[in-house]
Length: 359
Ligand code: MRU
Image 1 (tube, protein in one colour):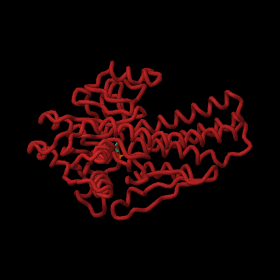
Image 2 (cartoon, helix red, strand yellow):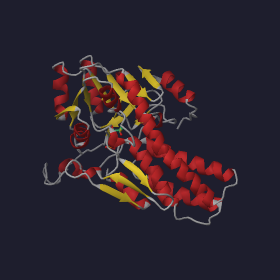
Image 3 (cartoon, helix red, strand yellow):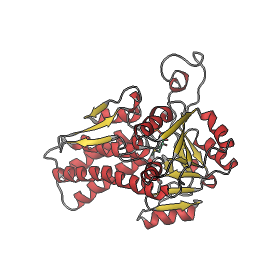
Image 4 (spheres, rainbow, N blue to C red):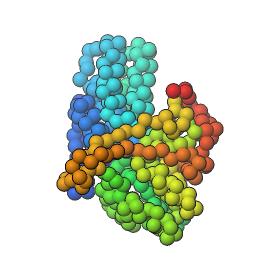
């Protein structure tokens, strides 16, 4: 049974409940979010994190932002929605699912307004849409798991980086979904989890949720990834993504690029598991992806006392970009994109009804 990371409680007067991930694994505490500021803060602090979960959090943030608006005209509601969305959009820059969810909510509101709905009608529709973002994410994770499980043989050992599991989605995860599914199918699967400096999502979150699910996990430092690959102890690498450009370049947690190079050097397949909501319809290559830079303290004193000299210069990008040529396949809910390139990625997006525009 995988953990439930984020959900909506109640109806129009309800609120969001999410696992406060900054406290894991010491404490498994739930956080109630009842304001837009609270949601922006939860996303920025990484109380809720991982691209699909951030998308769901943004959709729920919109619901919180409009729930108190009663008796408004359609036009007034749309204007208010624009302000709420702008605040949520500023929470974090890299995971495109956040912007995808806000765009989806705006599109729904606009189509209701165009059909003559007043403010209350639009709010009702936004609630329906936000809950659909949540439930569709659960189903999408399940489908990615089924597609990806075929890439995992009985007895395989998989290496993963960061946390792309249940804690990063509303469902059973992206990169970890095939591991959960393969295990369900009766295959024996073992996992090496990179600890993932500086905020230790691998150690704190991936190791925790896999242990909760009874899956064989071994924690390694990031520097040990090369060692276990050189020892021939890894059959495949599975990672998630925060944003994929239309040429197949993949942005994910800092350190993913190094793992991809190591995997190529050692002839080990490197798989990226991501829903179509993680593909950027506007960006033609990975170099265009905005990379979040986070505070120096996360590196120099991440969890308490200083681990570096006071005042040292720190460079702390939260993500990096792995070129498409290092990716063996991208696992999506619609199937596998093997050796991704622009033609293959754009074909999948167009088949899913996406509109592609060059930024
Ligand atoms: O900074 P985080 O913890 O939000 O970074 C998360 C990742 O990099 C994940 O690998 C990515 O969002 C995919 S999650 C399904």
